[in-house]
Length: 341
Image 1 (spheres, rainbow, N blue to C red):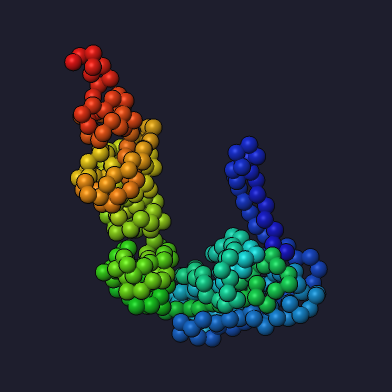
Image 2: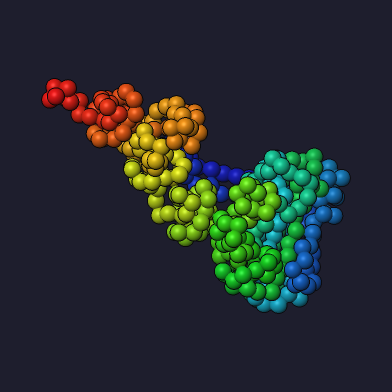
């Protein structure tokens, strides 16, 4: 059985620590496999074992222990593992040498499970040293479909291209990850230093077809990222490029995600105005109907920052745009404007 123990703070639902272990109750069945060559081909080692587990009630605990003999593999070779988790949580552990855990995917699920391996790849999980055995322990929550739950594949590769070298396939790279260097149809594919992120792309954005593409993760500041924070090492993608932090109030923006306050809107009621980040302390906006023939991109509602300073163009009697709540002659004015006129 797969046992997970968590220590948490009930008041905040915060997990403070977590550990896992494989618990064997009653008889178990370890299997031995041999990886004889290192030619970058994927090898399924446990399919027969999984079928036996599924067919025999004695071994349907949902846990398998597979020991791989890699005596014939040269020192320095890199090892990868891939699997397709079910919609029920699955867990895979890899040890090399036995007793030294090099991969724990934690409980993983995939609502798009398609009964085939290969949807998730972990590259270069270890390189061969002097020890000649590694262990894979697949754990499945479901007992009914052990032949599918416990299916995985392994592969070894002779080290190849270095990080950032141009590549055509994952097997070209020492990192086992070949993907677009940045979020641009003109970007080359390179060996990624920190894995990949899959994003759905569209032909209307310049890509040659609609579909999933892999991009290098943990990209540095300035790298093109579209609107995808997950591509950036900082976790911030603003105005199409990775940034060290989100944009502050009144900085030019292109989407809400660019801004500290979470709102990107027109800074004034002017078709030539740029969109900016609204106040980060108390961000707010208002939707106003504007007409295309007056210069706006289209006839319809457009978003505008509120709490704008005196002198901001505010259109026709849009008092709510102004921090003073006074829009006079299409400009924000001080609240005591009429007292001074």
